[in-house]
Length: 478
Image 1 (tube, rainbow, N blue to C red):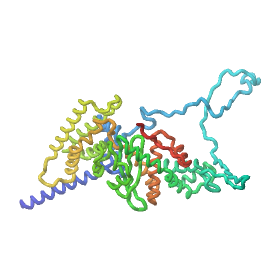
Image 2 (image 1 turned 135 degrees about the vertical axis):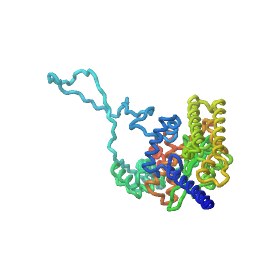
Image 3 (image 1 turned 180 degrees about the horizontal axis):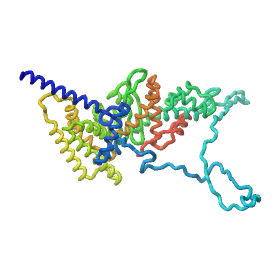
Image 4 (image 1 turned 90 degrees about the vertical axis):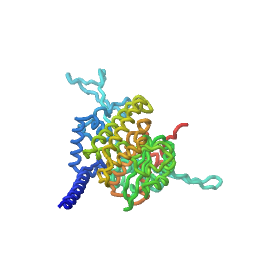
């Protein structure tokens, strides 16, 4: 009976551990794991909102995390406080002025022709002119010289056939599909209805690859600028091309975005793409192992990913103390860095930085004290907490780099935003049918996103591209 009792207790402990693991797996969502937000159920989303709101009432940390990092706190409808408005204002030089004068007196009925104007009230209406395609006929004359030589005039590049679409229509088609992500068929319908000339889906399907062909010089300059940048962000995501899984990589900063696709996810892709393999600045990433194999650059760890991991670990009661304390520290450090940037400092003051690092060490030590060696193989939840502690201990310089160098961002959202439109395109089309089409999409999105970051009108940049003069980002000064 004693042996049977011991065996049953052992089995019961295993069952309890397994139940705890399964319950923790059920609690996983986009806020405390790597799962995408689209996988969250309605119940999980409601629970996240309630949890954030309740924490916001109890602690400042949750308000800062929700507002500064996740930006998922329930907001009131309409314009948010502090956001700049976009009110339509009158202009000084309207394109057309229409005067509405009274013809007869409202009192006696006499004519007011020639009467003095006492005052004028102005109102301006902003509207589109009638949009119709402008057809320009180009005629190449052939002339005979007195010497007998026959010479024929040269058509411009845009007149490529007997009847063809010009740069503006091509640019608008690419804008609708590459910037606004409208499906090809609907974009063709829109152009046909608005422009007044028939536009086929076959024509639109070919304009993005055509645009990409003119971006060779732009992409090379973009890679050159990113190699010479001080701080860049990198990330990758998977998508299917012709049914085969590929990886889409991005390298970006506040003014530049470069996208490319590769069959590999790691070091081979970095080498073939040709930016990170020679980059010598600070690389901000999510901590994926292949990035750390790049030895010629400094590394910075995304704190938002660490906060998400801490949120998952804090759901275990025995781990909540140190995990919540570390989350508090990271958020407070971010707020301190934001204040220092407003004061135009390059790093946190030495005293503040030393105090934050001391608290960091104390929290890590308390975490190890809460995770002693159990004398057996750790279960899944114990391994997650212990592995996170080891990462916090071994990569403390990379995680705290944004404290000592305010050029470095707190998170890796810059890279994730660069990949967001790729996921939207994937939802619309399901997959890319050819590798050439995926590469053309990456080149076009690199062009569009870089132009947007530098305040360049996207449609104007696309029109220049089809006119044979693509917009180029400026090279850094000496």
